Length: 196
Ligand SMILES: *Cc1c(COP(=O)(O)O)cnc(C)c1O
Image 1: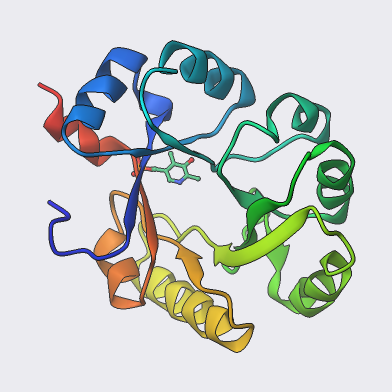
Image 2 (image 1 turned 120 degrees about the vertical axis):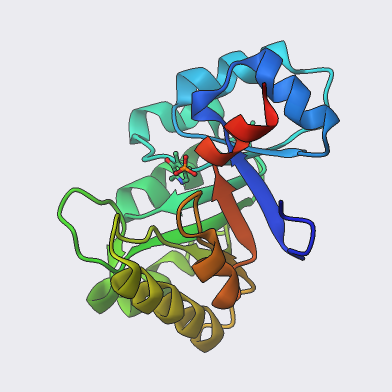
């Protein structure tokens, strides 16, 4: 399905148990992204024999940082200064982070608003445990035009700030994301097709 895509396909594995994840692994999916700290830690211990690259893609509460920040390879959802400060406190080494940008300005979504992005980028420079490598965003459900706009915007911002990673595109909008130079698709439900 993603044979021609040159970026990284991260399986958003909140829908899958570790047996299903093992099946996907043996079909060539080595990157998994979890939304909840508890699930991440449980699955990591069950899948310790596999050489998985672990992404955290959900909203991260500061009181959970200590338990997981040294266990992941990428954090896609850096979105506020309190989180930055907590990571600075507990990380043993610099953590590869992407800033989640809320480009649709929906209230229920996390993420830094565009108007605050410049300032946030300036502030996090002081923290040596944050290795900023990219931006992440989520499209708008059932709105192709708006999703097209925000993916184009994320690409533009990543260029402007010279950040190599663009985490965008899910089961319903990955083609649009690829068009706008996504480097990391986060695919969940669509992987069910591989698992009969
Ligand atoms: C669940 C989830 C995905 C994957 O969604 P699908 O529509 O199932 O592909 C991607 N990103 C985040 C942040 C998610 O929570």
